[in-house]
Image (cartoon, rainbow over the protein chains, first blue to last red):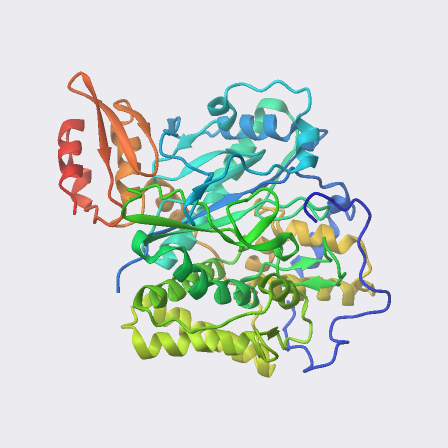
Length: 59
Length: 491
């Protein structure tokens, strides 16, 4: 939040998953298939990359 | 229908190995200065007025993020123009350091696809700067086209729309605000987690956490949904430059086009006096609630005790436009493609991943969760969120989805080179780009509004009316004098 930046890790409510809320079930979103170049690329990424990512505020 | 000239400014996230946010202004300055192509160095700041407010007053000063103030404490800076390292490119775009972020401001464009492709081509510009700077310092550099660092710092992707001054703040605010609140449903870039309460696993908008007021002129702090900065970059007696700051940076170019198109649709209706009338009880709360609404109902509380939802708000604009405007090709596409996507979202019918960034990113994350048997509590998901926006096509996850033909692609390499070498058809950016490419040795200063040349032993400033048509024949000018003469004849 502006002026009071959060520095602690943020996690969703324990046990809560997307689609748990009342209302229509979530839309069907097709997932990438095939031999999955995407997953291969994801596994090369440092999982702590965002934890270390700090920026100045811009506009 | 009068064409609405528009442009997009994107501030990129920047990481240099072994450097921190306290070094970011210096790093962004050096990165922009490393731009390897032909350009004009400098910018004419005389017409800038960031403290002027559309409501008829001028702020004494703009607010400043206190965390950033700590970064700057005790650090000497050079003159402001040296820190900004302005470059004007052969397509009329502006490249500079804005508060520690390399910023690419597209050439002003009249058409949606042209603007979206110029915006996408900006990724190549900052990537080339990064690669050049890496060679200079031998350190790894990463650039992200996103809007948050996940720790409370946000940086913007702003849209600019040229509108007649006579319309004024009240009409613009009334007719545009509902669209600004709901637009994220179709064009949000998606974010893991939240940077304000309440917490959520995933939300539609990168920026929703950062808007705390409905309208003001601030951009760095206490950000509003409707920004009232009055800096027209054109004759102020005739024009307003509407400065929209509440959108996300889109990786999918068709989403960029739709993001701009939805605002243009509202502006056409505003100008025509036929925009739908909505009175949201609390636009800031509605903006955040829609971003977090995993039920996809997107309910919005109205003044009094009634409710509506984002679907009805969208449809009210579409129906009003069909009823009262003569739609051009761009506006017809905005309405038909948006209706199709909204129907898919509401009725769970078809795939929306190709055209909506938040859906593409979420699909990617769900695939990872399925594969690795983890849930939304896995902290690595934010790393993948960030890397979706990495502009290096050999690393970025959006680029991986393009390779797999899962999302709409941007311009080809050949098309990108063309967008980087020419301004937009018929727009003043075309003339600015030509000046840089062809008469750069005579160009002494330039900005969005004017260009100043050294011609016949004197300084000659040329006003560039934003609504004029700038013909291709300008390319045929053989001297700066004839170029100036032709520019003065545009209408």
